[in-house]
Length: 295
Ligand SMILES: [Zn+2]
Image (tube, rainbow, N blue to C red; front, side, top):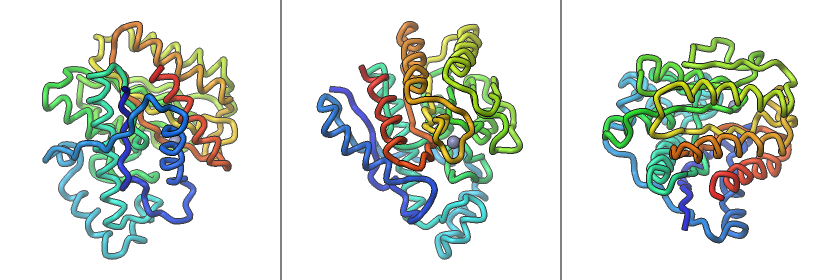
């Protein structure tokens, strides 16, 4: 029985917010009815020191300072930062790490959450407080569970925080395919950045993805690929300006899955962004990703 990870506390109490936190529970409900062979389990808690390996002490202190007045966090994160939100963020990091461990055991892992790639070592932005991707890979490297890894960031927004977290880390290759003319304005370099033009459609996107995978092919084989399967390259996304169809996104996921499977490389997936007006579209795209990688 395949394992999928979900931390209940990672449904952040953000109230009315463009980030549809309800997508998590909707994914869980669908999985329970549509994928009976998958088991949704709570992640193991983060090991001590995992967060501190990536984020500075000054930053972690500043985060705690927001707890008395969570709305003050909006200035930094564009989202409130209460103690409950922070617990959720820790749960999300634990979920991503557990999904990576699942991938190392069962070949693939899936976290219904995570992908907070706009969190830097010393600050957060763009709805991201802690970088679950960086925390997870840094922990696995520290433990010796992997000796190399690749981040394949296919969210519509560039993975600026992850790029900086691993700028000095030669064991992690960071790849970002994103809409060039979109947030973040400053795009610190990943190991490979492919900035895509506005309105790009399925076939051109899949060609660009093929180039990214060819680039990765030439690097030493990673022990794990962490895939940020953002739903925001979708044509109806409110914060994205690419024009992929649901079919195109499924072809994206199938390509990544097949590439890893053919090489015997464990693949771990996190959801990242997705802001279509109809949250049902976002949920459908995420579930299609799950179907693709768990088949
Ligand atoms: Zn995004």
